[in-house]
Amino acid sequence: MLIDVIKIALGLGLLLVAGDVLVKGAVALALRLGIPSLIVGLTVVAFGTSAPELLVSVNAALAGQPGIALGNVVGSNIVNSLMIIGLPALISVIHASQIDTRRSYAMMLAASVLVIGLASMGTIGRWQGLVLLGAMVLILADNLRSARAHRNAREEEEDLGDAHMPWAKICAFILMGLVGLALGADLLVDGAVAVARLAGLSETVIGLTLVAIGTSLPELVTSVMAALRKQADVALGNVIGSNIFNIAAILGTTAIIAPMPVPAEMLRFDLWVMVAAALTLAPFVFLRRDIGRVSGMVLMAGYLVYTGFLLGGTFGA
Image 1 (cartoon, helix red, strand yellow):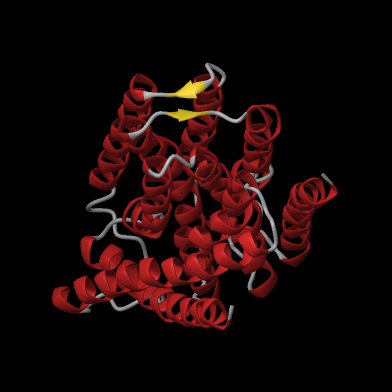
Image 2 (image 1 turned 120 degrees about the vertical axis):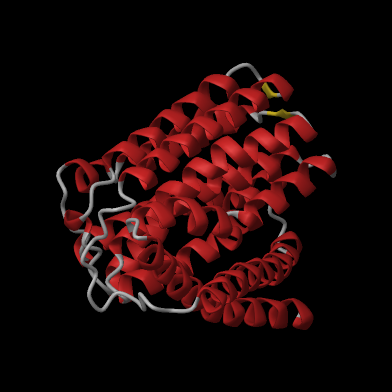
């Protein structure tokens, strides 16, 4: 137990340092390339912070633990939409009014609906995985088109980062941030899952809660740091991009490696909670409203209610 607690503490510390470094590198990259920070948040940052989810889901599927593999992705998206936006908003207002994320947000909702349709077949197998990966390719192509369209339209981003940071330093910051986030999340998840199993939690609940939160910590730390640095585009882009990547790339890859039976309770409840959580962001995206402390409290409360329901069902059974 002591070793597990030490792992949790070390993981948290590493996540904090790595998240700050990654945001610095990502913003500098956007400034050097002359593209919106939102594009970097939707791609480099989002994919990098989702690396732990990919590793956990693939390993769980290969180990014959579909509840953890699928629950990790579904739970992570719920965490992202509620807690990863809500907690940073409690610390610093996320100025969603200053950016336009409608197109990427619509893609995120479409991906969420698509995975429910595929999951309703009972198993997310190889052909479903190919469909999801195909969707990921189309989304990446759209982001590439957007980046090219904005290539020569550099935004005025005063005090948002170092536009003259050397390329070697930018690459080093991004690499160190991504590696540090992955290692920190791995340490924390190992410790947390060990403690949870001692407490008697089921595989699916562990995947939907502790593993999902643990593998979403890179997104959380990155979004907090981005909010503190007044980088709403990186914070929102990170969450939207991570949710898309979790569904299309991670589930797609995992399904091709090892088909995943969909637990009945997840199809009845958790997948729909994932869509509902995503829809809570609609007013901020489409009405261009800032996400302040009150909104952050509501989002956090929503996640706590969901987690309480899962844990209450487990311990009440």
